[in-house]
Structure formats: structure tokens, C-alpha cells
Amino acid sequence: MSSHQANHISFGTDGFRGLIGKDFTYDVVRKTAQGIADYISYKYMRMEKPAVAVGYDRRFMSDRFARTLAEVLAANGLNVTLSATPLPTPAVSLLTTKGYGLGVVITASHNDHYWNGIKVKQNGRSAPPSVTADIESYVTKAVPMKPSGAPLPVKDFRPVYAEYLNSRVNAAKTLAKLKGPVVIDFMHGVGAETASPLFDSKNVIKLRERHDPLFGGMAPEPVEKNMQELIAAVKKHKALFGVALDGDADRFALVSDKGVYMTPCQTAPLILEHLLATGKYKGKIAQAVSMGYLTKRIARAANLPFEETLVGFKYIAEKMLNEDVTFGVEESGGYTWKGNLPERDGALTALFFMEMAVKTGQTVSEMYAAIEKKYGKSAFIRRDFKLDKAIPNKHSFAVKIKKKLPKILLGHKIAETNTIDGLKIVLDNDWWVLMRPSGTEPLLRTYAETDTAENTKKFLDLAFKFIEHK
Image 1: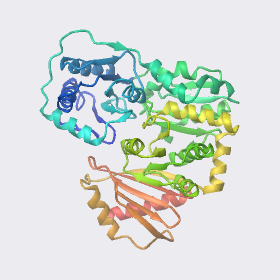
Image 2: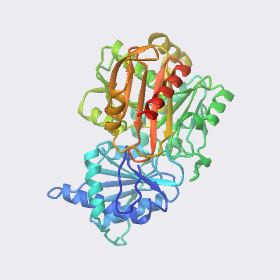
Image 3: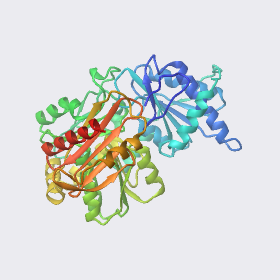
Image 4: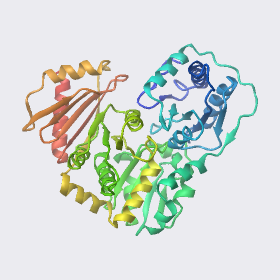
């Protein structure tokens, strides 16, 4: 995710991130901009060079970092346009399908306020690893060009994004038909910048819409521990449901009408079941290896192909671009489906749930009760363990543990083991646990899903014992 040397940046699961003033400085931004410019001039040596759109989120100094980056790109003779306002990351992805060959966003997504970062976008999604690896190698040798001082073209891109969202779900019509209020928590993030043309309605209650670079003192990450204000508002207003978007508005989280936080393993099947009920979708279901079994069971029941990818939405995006994929999902709250950009989008997912409530006439808890009845219960928990030292080789770690596994865990046979991204152990009743070392920091991410929270915790405890005895 981050790098501690100014001359070496590393694009992790989605972009480069670093601590402001330490790893993320004007020098790092200039060097990265020059690396991107050098990559473009090499890649498009005999062709017309792509236009570049530069966006930024609401973080401390993001607008200045964005301007600095854009000025270096312009000094290299590139056609650059800077966003006039903070802009959701999916909006920059959209621009790369609207005449811009490349998009760059200054954002640290869901991280705390003292982080910032850079995401690179292409063809409506995050630039693939082959592109970011090339950019990294150019950044190492980059000598930033001095800006010419000429004025930069600046444009308000928000209307283009609002138009795209409305072309997928008619916001005004849908909001007018809602049979009760919906609460949206922007977590002080950039999603609020496009809220006015989309979510202005007596049926929508907005939380934490105000621009606050400190994000109210918590990371703008839509996970359960950060949802207390949203849960309270859903209960108070007797809302149909509540939604939260992260700092750069590509992630989405759901709270039911009963004020219950819905895990991504519960939210994804709601979307998928509704999509399949229309009868229009026949393609593959693609999900990150850290996702759950309800989507797998739905795919099985619908006789649809199903595939798991490495963690990181860029791997889902790649599948969506190159294959017939109906639905793509990752565990951190990223959702997309056929007909949209191959990119996660918090606002679009929020509109989709509003449309779903209008079309079905049901609450989220009613819709989810039907899923449980058909496909079983899901209790998903993620737990991160601090380690004494980083595990540098994810694959050898997975293979070592795999060799020592017993045949039966929690009274069930091991049906499969998956080592594409850490070690995922799947039992014969679909229960699973994933152990995934960070690779860059002394951290082990563990994820598990069973039919009850008690069983899931047991599975996670068991996983930790495997690590201790590795």
C-alpha cells in the first residue's frame, strides 16, 4: 500500500498510499507525475498521446497535490484537465471512457485523514497491474519537469457523472416512489459532492455531508464499527434502510430497516438475486476470494459459472472487460454488474437499492429473510492479527499450512483449499476461512463465514492456531 522511500512508490491492491509529509509529499507527487508522463511517452511513442483527467478527494491538500501533479503532466506536453471540484473515484473512471485515455485521482480512499495517495484509472476501471508496474519502474528514474506556469484547463466533471448514474437508475423518479425515508451517510467523503443533483428528496436523510478533512475523527471506512451514527438514524427515522459510502465514494455499506449492519456477504446476494430475477443476466459471477458462499449458492442454483479472483477490484474489472460477467463483488464493499462500468461505485449501488425497494415493495430485512430461507444463513467476520514480522511470501506461507491441515475441521471434511491469495479452506458444507498475509506489513488478515457468529469465531480461533504452529 505505501512505501517509505521517496524514490520508490508501489501500487498495492488499488493505488499508492502514504502518510502525508512522510511518504506522501510534493516531491513524491511530482516524481509520480513524471513517471506517468514518461510511461505515456514511451507507450504512445508513435501515436497520439492520450488526454489525462486529474481528480481529487476531500482530504487535506488533495486539491493542491492534484494541481501539482497536473502541472508536471502538462509540462511534458500532455493534454491535461484538472477537476474543478473534489470528485468521486468512479467519476474519474467514467472519464476514461469519455475521451480521456488516463485518469489520475489524488485519494487515500477509506484510510485515516493523515494518509493520501494516487490511483490510476484506464478504460473505466483501475489501471491493471501491468500498467502500474510500468509506471512504478518509470517513477524510480523520473526527473520531474518544471511547470511552465501556463494556466491549466479546469472543468466541473460532476454533471457528466450525474448523467451516467441517471442513465442507469432514474434518481428523481425512484426517490419520489420510495415508500419511506432512506438514510445516506457520506462519512464526510467526496460522495457528498454529487449528492445534490442525485439525492435531493424529502425521502433522503443525509448524514456527515459537510466537508471535513479530518472525517469527524474516524477513518471514512464503511465498516460496522463506524456505522453507529447511521444505525441510530435508521432506527430513529424508521427508514427503509441506510447506506454509507467511503472517503472516495467507490465503496458501499448497507444497514437494514431493523438497524442491522449487513456484511458484504449478505449485501451481495441481495443484489445478485434481484439482478437474476429480471431474467436478463446469464453470465459468470466473479468475486474476490475473501467473499462468501451465498453468491456461490445462488450461482449454483441458477446454473451460472462462478469464479474467485485475487483480492482487489482490479481483478474483477479485468474479468468484466474480457468475459461475460453478470456480477462482480469484493469483500470491502465493491459491487458492479453488467451494463455498468467495470468499477465499484457507492452512489450507483445506493440508487440500485432504492430502485430495488421501489420495485419489490419490500424492506431490506424482508428481502434478506427470503435469501436466508432459500440459501441459508451467513455470519461473516473479518479479523486482522498483528504479527511479529511481515510474511514476505504469501504462497509459501499458504503451502506450509496446507501441508499440516487435518482432514476434518469443526466436524466437517475439507472440500477444497485455494492458494491464489493466501490460504482459503472450504469445508464440505461451504463454510470457509481465509488466511491472507499483508506481504508489506506484519499483519495477517483472516476472514471466515459459517451459519452462526459463534461458529465463525471458532473457525477464526482455529485459523490463528495454525499460524502459531506454522
